[in-house]
Image (cartoon, rainbow, N blue to C red; front, side):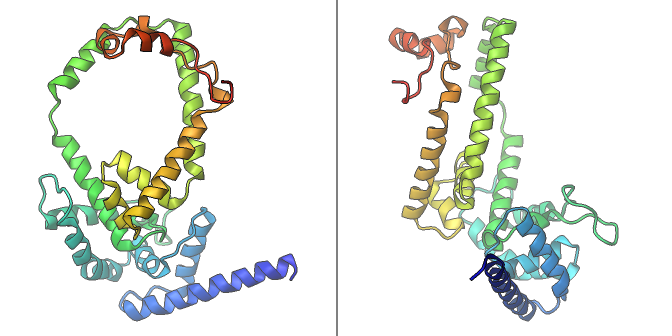
Length: 291
């Protein structure tokens, strides 16, 4: 089979899946009445962004809602809302009730999305248009609800005395020289770029797991359950992702750049490390390849 024939076959297979998903979605939510053409364009745009949606039926409902179709939002309230709220009964809610948290979540999803051009009628798409069908729409809404709860909790959380003390200690630390500040800036940029590249190379599942666990404080088992992974599989994916991120830092680009000078530490930092550790850490960093 030639290259062009192979591409044509793959395209036909993708079109068949899209056609079946459209038929299933219109049977499930006939009141939405989103055209097949507009749905296909929406899916095409998402694929051109590099995503590979696997939940095409859910993508129909979310895409219609993102295009400000009221029947789609009514379907989300009726079919998605109860399932999301059942899951939220096992999640931290900050100071909100489950109903209030779901309401805040819907409001978040209905906010204007400023990352896309305006719709044909001049209005802005709703933020739910960012859903790419990588996970079930129910799980996606649960994730947004958890973010809403976490953000609300952080706003209400008073500053701890230890935080104030740490800020004071930092203010007493010796100031860096311009050269040290430049070196530190270069190091931060180098590490940021390398980690960004490593994160981008992870699978969508690994990115989701790391974000939920280390940015939003979820347990590994709970994060895996949101995207249909067993505890064992989630653990394996997380370990693999962390291994890749660690190997990224063990590279020649960082060799000779990382230096930790105890003279620049404040009293709290110095007390946290024994003298032997300070001597080790003050030496230039060497990768495993150099040892």
